[in-house]
Image (cartoon, rainbow, N blue to C red; front, side, top):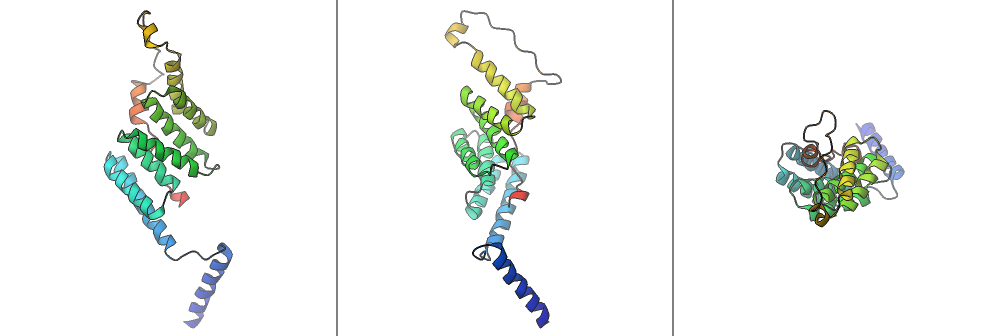
Length: 200
């Protein structure tokens, strides 16, 4: 029995000496587990269209884990679903600052959601920049390409005073196999909050 305790103690000492400059406090892994569980709770609520519950869970996780980019992204995405766009923009921008450069998919998702936010506010230039930033990270994202095309069409429209004097142009044809593509893009397709398993 003493031999087992000696092996465990030696292993713990080796981990403490090898892993970091300072030993990790014993409660940190417990905090991460709690934050991860709250994040999962928020995920489930978001998936069943309960954004208020999701937001509460993500904010509780933030209290435990701090300003983690996953939680900021999830909070911003949920705030968008609730129509609280100013708060959503702040959270999404904060998440972008914390996402490491090598996590291009996560960065692209944050830029994509910012593009949707700006699109909803008719901030065409900022929406175009956000979709382009998403496409630089994930060039084959058809949703970002489609939304960018919609933004570019909006930017090419003349001001409303000029539109009154001219007959309206014919509507562009919808993409193949798409009924109501704009509704799908702007109402049904937000990049869902992250599970975050590989980031904890």
